[in-house]
Length: 417
Image (cartoon, rainbow, N blue to C red; front, side, top):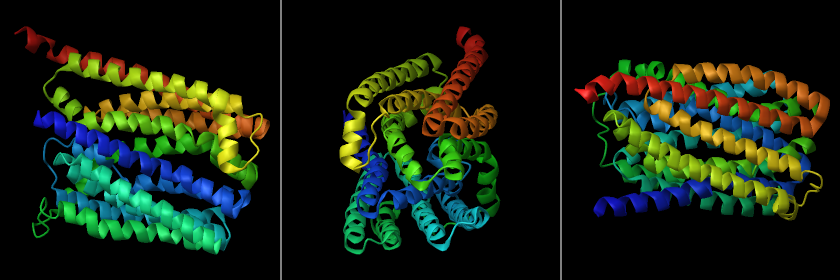
């Protein structure tokens, strides 16, 4: 009974906190588009997308790797020190990126500020991993809720008063720093011993052990944003804003997948550890059915109401984009199913095959994005997005089924005995 109550509390708060944090990017884009105009919104869109990709460097192997690290090879302190190093590398890469792209000072500063904000989110993830292992997932949700709510409110007020995107983006950093130094550290201070010795070989071993998890996450975000980079190279900032608006609802599908997978993560680990593949597949099917149902409903709403609602919210003319919006929602649903397979394979530590999948998909993303955007503009970006997500879904479906079948055969003789 107590476990059921704990699961419900974790599920509700995690969904609420993760939801408001994920939707914060949507709210912030609305604010920037309305207050600062469509051109600055285009700069914000590509800068935020880049910050999300660089975030993967900061978060490196991620919370899933940390939580599913069942061998207890690494301590919480070592994960924290490793995260400090990855965040430093993330910011170095940010400066390198804006230098290579030859952006002007204003655009470069927006990129740097948003990357700094995402670096704080990356650091928070290692703290959240500690909370989740202690069955305190509801605390993670509460932390997300506090940060995202304060950030949106303060960003809106400052941007409205100053009309200055640099000052508004700086406020995001301040909010996250304050909450990390107060709520987050207060929550974990009794769970870890900061005086305990740190084995530096373990700190660097996390880089080695988590490399493929990092690689697939990094490449995963790149392939999702490949059409945006083609737009950045071949089209204008206002076109970047329009594509950013019609692709934004796809994040709702990804968010729904996170709602489902995170509360069940510990259960997936236990089922795999106990070789309960039948129950694992049953849980997987349950999650995927929910995702498909949500995707169908979202696609219908996108086609019938999507454009009018987005026009009302953003104040941008989107007539003629209904089909593109629907295609993006369908593509995102396929991607999210692949993401469920990815989480299961990561739990089973089958990461090399995922690395290969994303290498191949990245090549497809580069070719299709450049080709379709150059020839068909925004419609080409949509076609490229769907093509990328479709191949990712197919590759993951095939890989997961083959690996599960192989894993089950390993234990069939043991089960018969």
